[in-house]
Image (tube, rainbow, N blue to C red; front, side, top):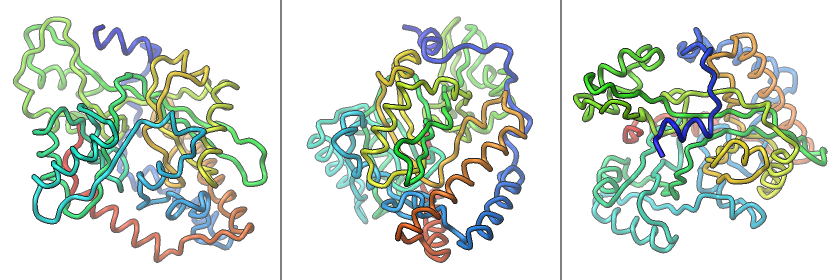
Length: 367
């Protein structure tokens, strides 16, 4: 099946959408300034500077930053474990990348995983350092570029083209939680005309041409190619907005069946109250029935309701969603503190944040 045809099966077309919203690629400080001010107000209100770090008490800092992806996935209980994309991990050798490859392939064999496989940092965010590994040569190049002595997650590649971020929250005293956001993610692509190079196609695309810096460095080795007439070229693999993927608000697809399914998933993670579960799915119809998907990541208090990056979302709506979700994180964290759970200190979170930032600057470029 052609890529463009397959994408239409999992993502409904909205041809009237603007290619990009006016605030979508603002500097972070500009977009998040009101959000930070809101968080400071919440800290004063609850007399706790980082109450939200107790939103998920059994995750490092509640998942605010610096948490281990593997440690979170390891907590998923048997009720939801079959839904996880299988994974394994290893720590890179201090000196020898060849040793890393041997250890990685041994771990893959033990986990009954084969190529292709997705490699990603155990600590990180925004899709930084995520690569699709096709074979031993790719694996060697990835591990050789990875910081020494750090943990790498190797995960089953789920070929389904549908990807979504489903945001769930539940107060500790509530019998059931709710889905407050669904983001449908899909990769930007260009279609060849048999004459233009890939570089030219990117630069003339209504959306990609506005943010070519997100694609050109990653595709530098292919920019001279001339895709055939009608050939669709996918521009990015990782499903992250700031790396170039396109996000759409799919919150209206939060059916009772999907909500019940994610309630079971959240309950299978001890003391999980607030966060986003990222999945790959076979079809939107199946997803709304709570079927046909696999979990690729679970994110905690630092995760966003990413539907705000839909080009059709207004700035007011985006800020309102941010205020709502961070406000809920603070309230849930405060409720957990009242139950006796501790929250990470400002010094602890600052150390975690600094380490995460340092590591992210050293990871290989993502796909």
